[in-house]
Amino acid sequence: MTRESLILAYHSLDDTGSVVSTRPEKFRQQMRSLSDSGIPVVAMDRVTQTPGSVAITFDDGYSSVLEHGAPILARYGFSATTFVVTGQCGKNNDWDQRGRMIPKLSLMSWSQLRELLAAGLSVGSHTHSHPRLNAQNVREELERSKCEMEAHLGFRPTSFCYPYGEADAAVRRTAGEFFDWACCSDLAYTRPDADRCWLPRIDAYYAPANLATLLTPAGRLYLAARGILRGVNRWLPR
Image (cartoon, rainbow, N blue to C red; front, top):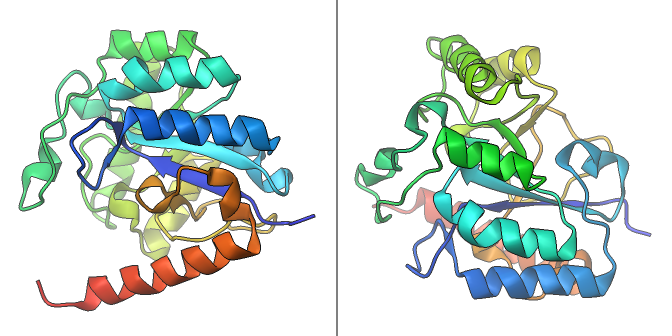
């Protein structure tokens, strides 16, 4: 039995074809493949304790998660965690309009987030304003996001996701003071001994329709190749 698990990272569920978008029909196929495979789909706080499992996450808090994602997840009895940018609730992803080819997409309001919670999904923090975190802004961003969620949703979140998937050692240490778990964007599997403040995830942009293949030897080779290509692309001149 494999000791590795997967944390899947989605953003929006829509048909725009952008790098933050997964078609709702593809998401439906992926969830059906997980259900048919018998692979355990667990909450994020259990993924390191459940070898061979899958956890599902969504970044930013797009309205499409409630519209398309929640009904599909409910059909298969799957849990998921949505990381929200508290200062943008009910607005849009305007941080993505700064030189990036990403469409303007609506984000859930606080009332919609309460609907999401009522549907059985979890909510975590993705900061207050989605900045690149550093020693100067990290504490204010994390504390403000927790306070906003407590005021509007009635609880302080225990999970977190770094904006842009990035954080230096100091930011990671601070995240560990505020949250039990924190996710990054490293394209890798999750092991039982993974750093709780640096949990790698598989971006849905790279995921096939049959998610079960990712836990096979062929799937591991595929992700290793994608990881190399992504690393090369980051170093190419823009």
